[in-house]
Amino acid sequence: MTHAAGQSALPAGSDPREHARALHRVRLRALAGEGPPQAVRTVIGASWRRARRNGLDPGRAAEVPPLDGGDLAQRRAASGLEPLMPLLRTRLLPAAEAAGQIMVVADDEGRVLWREGGPDVRHRADRLGFVEGSAWDESSVGTNAIGTSIVTGEAVHVFGAEHYAESHTPWTCAAAPLHDPVTRAPLGVVDLSGPAHTVHQSTVSLVDAVARLVELELRAESDARLAVLREVAEPVLARVGGPAVVVAPDGATAAARGVEVPGRVWLPAGLQPGALWLPSLGAWTAEPLPGGWLLRPRSSAAAPGTDDDGVSATGVVLDLRSSPARLRVAGDDRAWEHRLTPRHTELVAALAAHPEGLSAAQLAAEVFGDAGRTVTVRAELSRLRRALGPLLAHQPYRLAAPCTTLPP
Figure (tube, rainbow, N blue to C red):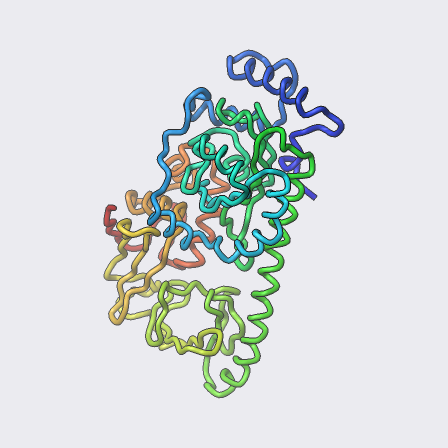
């Protein structure tokens, strides 16, 4: 079942051409500041208002240049979406090709990472600038299924003149959000797009159903791997005799003995055997296991180079020179490093620039230009705290250690 925003843009039994003409009349009156002759869908009206507040000109094409090949490859690697692609190609791409549409996968900031389908519709998309690496968020191009789905967190169908940009009105698109199957963190969206004549009332339901199915299938695969790891962990934990945790490569906890740990331990990038410091847990050692890692606490004390709260006394570095950006916490024996998503990079950069701390509303204004988006800010900071632990303080939100930012 789709949410309200996931309802089809094409009313049941309506003629697509006549509906397109009616939408065009609605759009012209609304964008001229006049009352629309008939009610526009709530999700579309709200998106149009956001586009006007952002100062977008519906008559001008997007001016955000696409990513080059190197940046696109880095975005793909950092997105967490790549494991979903084989299933999306199997489950959704044939439907896109049969309908004369393209399948598009974008990250959680609306950057198009993959675009696949027949050559004719891809050539048409090229003329719109709808290419791999292009920015398709609302703040760049206004109302569209990809950008609006990111804002609402729901499946969205946008048809014809419901698009904010005049150049997009000959198109139809339906998008649904994608989530990490283990952490449930938002990763981006999957979208079917094509010329307006390819519109179908069931497209948005199909995209939403496939997105959920892909997440479930990947979650089942993850659970199966975790079950195998638990079998490996049982004799290992019995042998070590003290507090220990066995985790999968993605940090999912398979088993623990003598210590309470969360369902997922956020591991540093490029984890190697030996001593490490986990902001969420403290000073530990890592030993490789088939299909995972054995983690054991080094002592009950804080990690070397940290204060009593487990926060590094030698400081924190936000490195914006790489893509994705990295947050490094210095330790005596090794630096802990965490790769940041683009959205988390913006939040950490804002906190680094305001060591006195910021409220959720202030952060929303800094990052989104909208102080009202506090729910989104709190949700993102909750996910970030799972990785950073006590390094991310609150009331107000702030970094609990001095942070040096290395600019790009």
